[in-house]
Image (cartoon, rainbow, N blue to C red; front, side):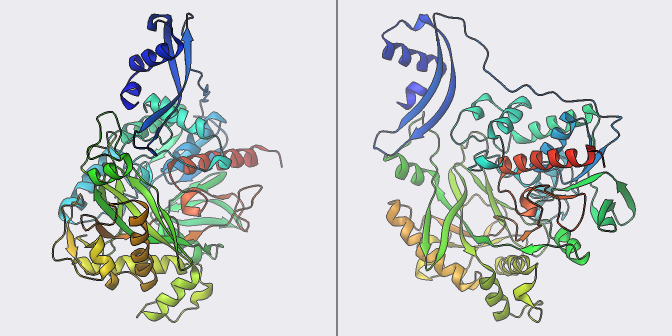
Length: 525
């Protein structure tokens, strides 16, 4: 029962009852796994634990990390981007005895807060410091979810142990869907940065990549701010899925990149009480249960419609990176105690969809060879974001529509309370989204209402546009060396290169790329 899983004392009491022994004979426990099973009317908490009966409790087994002092290392690696991939790559390099030089276009986590406040309250965006750019990357202020299915990409437990080492609560090591929370993650990111500096690495904020220094297809370093040159033995490119200027820079330098399918749609927000009542089969969630979440997927006319980055007890935030473009994302604090639940609800987009849409619009790229253009999907993404910004009326006010009204193609006479601080504008989203996206969402919402009774309701509001689900560009790399196939010493990494999706998978990819870069620059010619 949930109340029996509320703390170690109650768990010990329950174990003693099951074993018909006295609670005093249990000297302690280590929880190994914990999950909530709400499939029946009575929710249960499943726990796997190591129990110490009539024996001393031993410390939990943890990974031992051995970082080296790299102040005077003869080898250096430049890491562009201080998101999870960049930070974990830097940490791994210090373990390997190689000096990381981390450059980040945005500000440190504390300074970012002020820019986010101005964006939310005044509708003014700093294109270099926002929800996507800055120390910690997009994940820092968009939740800190640590759940991933990417088991083949690396050691998930190692990544969780590192987060715990730098200040995350122990529970992330055993929860089925670990989560740190936007209010706590910045302190952990700061601790990582300070450790990198203590080991002898370098971290440079407000340092923007403006060009690559290439000699005979070999990357020698980067140019920053159109003037200074930074040289290194290798460069890890970990700039995230929203660094459009980097994609354009690669294309201008005739460095091979490819258009990549992604997904686009809206953020859907319900009162958390509705999701709780559906998932827990009760009118009121008990105090020992966490705010309920959900995961939904449906095939509509050959298109995948699915939930993305679900945030129980969360908030919708403006995740744009430039003026005149509207992007929304979601996050939750560690307690997930806000009154709303939000989730991305998105539709898969293929290259043929983007070509058809851009050709149907008065697009600046209409005359180009769109079918084969490596920035095709980025152009499509940008066009929708610009249309959403215009529909909202400016200052990042978001176009929105009640769920049932969206299905009925009726502009909402009013909109429900919403967590999105810049505000909402009632708009028919069929005027904002491409027809194939809108119709897929329309059918998807109705189908989800059949799967989750009560989900399809006008108390829910759809907020446009959720468009940064993954990178619209892939930067190729050799499967064995992880280097770019055309440019030696260039290591495309994580979300921005199309090889990860989320904090943990990005961190694992960062470590993997760091290992390969270290091996390449350390081996004799």
